[in-house]
Each structure stands twice: as C-alpha cells, then as structure tokens.
Image (cartoon, rainbow, N blue to C red; front, top):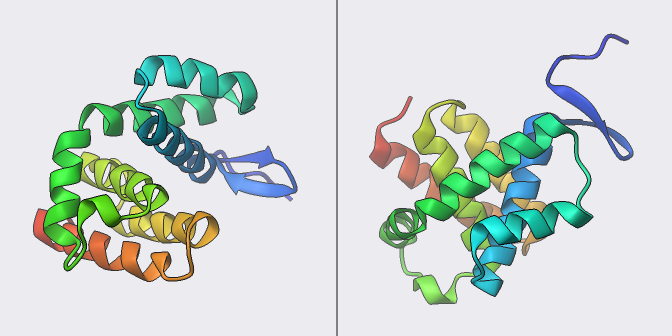
Length: 149
C-alpha cells in the first residue's frame, strides 16, 4: 500500500499528521488552562514526554501558540455562541477543543468542515458523551457567523 504524504505512523495505525497535531495542541491548551503557566515553558515541558515527528510537532506548536495568544478573543467568541452556557461552567477539555478549533477555523488554511469534524472527534474521544454534540453546535454557529466557506 502506498503511503500518503500527510500520513505518518503513530502507534497502532496510520493517523493523519494534522489529526495527531490537533490532539497534541488540544492537550497543551488543556494543560495551559489548568496550570496558567507561560505557554512557551509549557510547550517545552510537554515535548519532553510526548513523542512526535517534527512535522507533527511543528503543526501542533503553531496551533497551540496561535490559540494561546488569541485566547481572549477566542473566549469571547465561545461565550457569544455557547447559548445557555456560562463560560466558567464549560469543561476545561471542551474549552481547549473549542479554542483550538475556532483558532484554526479563522486561519482559513484548513476547510472549516474538516476543523469542525476533527473537533467533534476530539470531544468524543476526550470529553463526555454530550460534548460531541455541544462542540458541533457551537462550532457550527461560529462557522456561520464568521461567514467562512
């Protein structure tokens, strides 16, 4: 079987480089939210224990750093679109997923539907059963409001 350029071996099977990068970026955002430490120090500490190819690491760092730098704006977008939810009551993992996805969605390098689907999968994998639907609803509303194709 021929390998595709965006695929790399990650554990038990082939996982997209970008999918794995998003997972790492989400984990860094979660740790950053919980620890409130400087994001550059957290990044260094994170990669001491997490192993990844250079391309995976580079894309994860780009996503994490961008979301961390824009966290105030991202949080305001989440508050605006998370109907009937107080921001403080959102699970920290859901905040990390939403911050990551909204940051990537507004960058326009990746099709918004891809970002949305990847975020829903992260929510299903790392959060509660209801989180997938919640993340989908918030990101769909954000996507419509940003008027991104």
